[in-house]
Amino acid sequence: MNYENMTLHTDKYQINMMYAHWVQGSHNDQAIFEVFFRKLPFGNGYAVFAGLERVVDYIRNIRFGDEEIAFLREQEEGYKEEFLEELREYRFTGQLDAVPEGTIVFANEPLLRITARIFEAQLIETAILNFVNFQTLIATKASRIKQVAGDDGLLEFGTRRAQEADASVWGARAAYIAGFHATSNLRAGMLFGIPTKGTHAHAWVQGHDTEEEAFRKYAEVLPDQVTLLVDTYDTLRSGVPNAIRIGKMLEKQGKRMNGIRLDSGDLAYLSQEARRMLDEAGLHYVGIVASNDLDESLIFSLKGQGAKIDVWGVGTQLITSGDQPSLGGVYKLVAREKDGEMVPVIKISGNPEKVTTPGRKDVYRIINRETGIAEGDYLTLVEEGPLNTEEPLRLFDPVHHYIQKVIQRFDAIPLLTGIFQDGELVYEVPSLEEVRRYHREQLALFWPQVLRKTNPAEYRVNLSDTAWELKMALIAKYMA
Ligand SMILES: Nc1ncnc2c1ncn2[C@@H]1O[C@H](COP(=O)(O)OP(=O)(O)OP(=O)(O)O)[C@@H](O)[C@H]1O
Ligand SMILES: O=P(O)(O)OC[C@H]1O[C@H](OP(=O)(O)OP(=O)(O)O)[C@H](O)[C@@H]1O
Ligand SMILES: O=C(O)c1cccnc1
Image (cartoon, rainbow, N blue to C red):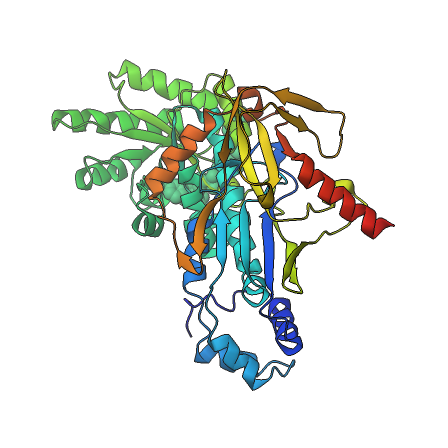
C-alpha cells in the first residue's frame, strides 16, 4: 500500500467530469478557477492564509501509477482504457497564482487562481480545498490565541486530540506561522523545523511512590529541562512545595529549574498562589505553564483575572478548531475557453452574497500613503491591466452599493503571486521562519479594530467598476 501517493486524494466526481470532458473532446479547453471563502471563521475580522506549501508539493507529485490506474479500472463507471492511459500522462502544465502563506486574507477574494486545461484543473480541486481550508482555519484560530496571549509563550499540544496524523503536523505548522513558539509533536519539528518542547505527564508522577521522588528522578536525568507537573495530588499543598525543593536542589548544582505546569483547578488562583510561593522561595525565574482545554476566550479571561501564567499549552481547542470545525473555502470556475476565446462564467444564487464574481481577477491591497494602513482589498479583472495608483480610487461595496469611499493617495500591493508557470515551479518557496516573519509584518498593515477578536470592524473587499459591470451584465443575462 502506497500511503504517500496523493493523486487519488480527490472526489470521484472530478474523475467523472474529466472522463466526460475527455469523451466529448473538451478536455484540453482552458479553464480558470479561483479559490475563496465567503465567510470569515469565528466571527474574526480576518483569516491567516496557510496551506500553499502542501499544495505545491502535491501538484508537483501528481502521478497516476500502476496502483492508481488498476483501482480506477475496477470502478463501476467502466472508464475506457485510453482514458486511463491519458491519466498516466497527467502532469500539471498550467499556471497557479496564490497569495503567500501567512498573508492576512478576507472573504470573497481569490486566494489561489488556477489557469489550466480543464482536465488538469478539475482533478486538483478537492486536495487544494482540503489543504487550504484546514490550514487556514487553524492558522486563524492560532492567530486569535496569539492576539490575546501577547508576548506570553505559546505551546501547541494538540496531537493526541487532533483529527488524525496529517491534521496534527500541518496544524502545528499553521499554529507556528501565526505566532505559536513551539510544538510538542516531534514529527512536526523534524519535518518543518518548528522548535519542540515537552514537560512530563501525570503518568510519571503516578509511576513513583511519591511525587517528590518522581520530581527528583526527572530532574536528575534532565536537569536543564525541568518543568514539573504539579497537580497530580494537591497543587498547593504538595505539588508546588515539592517542585520548590527540586528547584533548590538544582540551584545547588548551579542549575535553574525551567518551570512548573498547572493542568487542572482554578488556573487564576493556583497560578497566583504558586507564583507567590515560588517567589518567596527565591525562585523568581521559574515560569508557570498552564494547560487544560484552553482557548482564546479562557486565556483572555484568565489574563483578566490576573493569572500569573507565562506559557500557555494549547491542544484540543486549537488543533480541532473546537468552536468552528471547518472553513468553507470553495473552488469556482470563473472563465472557460469557448471557440478559442476565454469567456467569463457566473454561478447565480438567490442569496446575493453567493453569486460568484466572473472573470479572471487580480487582487490588490490598497495601502493609504498617509497612514501606511490598508484601506481595503480591490479586485480587478486581469485584462484591466495593472491598477493605476496615480488617480483617486473609489471603493464601493459590491452588495450595498451606496457604501463607498474615495482614496486619494495610495499604494496597491498585488496579493497573487506566480507559483507555477507552464507547469514549472517559478516560486521560491519561503522557509517557515520567513513565512512566520512575513505574517507578523502583515499584521502591522491593519487597524487594531480589524484585528480585534470580538466584533471586529469590517474590512472592505471591493470590485473595480469593470469587474462589477461584468458581474451585473451576466446576472442580467441569466436572470432575464
Ligand atoms: N479561573 C478560571 N476561569 C475560567 N476558567 C477556568 C479557570 N481555571 C480553569 N478554568 C477552565 O475551566 C475548565 C474546567 O477546569 P477544571 O480543572 O475545573 O475541570 P477539569 O478539567 O475537569 O479538572 P480535572 O482535570 O481536575 O478533572 C478548563 O477548561 C479550565 O481551563
Ligand atoms: O487540554 P488540551 O488543550 O487538549 O492540552 C493537552 C492536554 O493533554 C494532556 O492531558 P492528558 O489528560 O491527555 O494527559 P496527561 O495525563 O499528561 O494529563 C495535557 O495535560 C493537557 O491537559
Ligand atoms: O509536554 C507537555 O506538557 C504536553 C504535551 C502534549 C500534551 N500535553 C502536554
